[in-house]
Image (cartoon, rainbow, N blue to C red; front, side, top):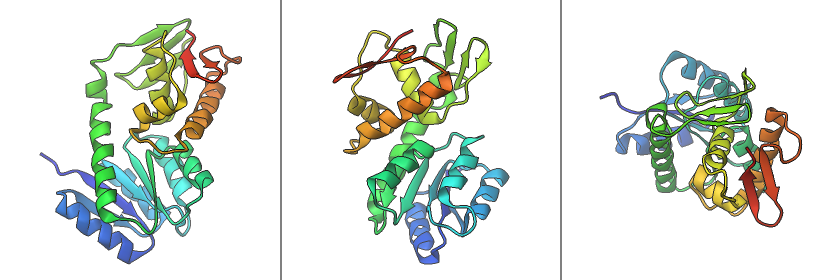
Length: 229
């Protein structure tokens, strides 16, 4: 069985080596990239199971690396950054990251988050999702096996988290989900600004679906969101 390969992209060699040592202790195979371009090339040249990305790197920053990764790949991304504001965290998550940690950091906590994201990735993989049902409603088709969405026959390109939010709501069409509940279900965390992160994702999701207000995702004011298929 192939070892899990984890990309570490950070321009600080001491931090990269520290992370690599802890990943090796966990039984993972780490590979290191010193800048954004090297990180993108690593992703294109080999199978990556998870990436740990700094944001402020020479050349391509972590946001741009994430954007390019999300054009083709669904593996988990964890931002590890000295940028500590809530806006930075929300931006990272909206860009397509699955988790966000700030520096200085506890290596054991980072390993716990790596393990959590890999576990969630396996649960949400196409082979696992194949056991879930396809959802069809009014021209919208959500296929968890292919991890695809089409609207009136036209493909809708979603980030992994946008897909997970839409599928969660659509698979439970009569259930209202609070923003905090959605965050816990999709991100597997209890981050206190999770509600704002969900709100931004829902706003972007609505734009991609080209919907009128409340067409597919209805807001129940003061309560949460419900699928309106």
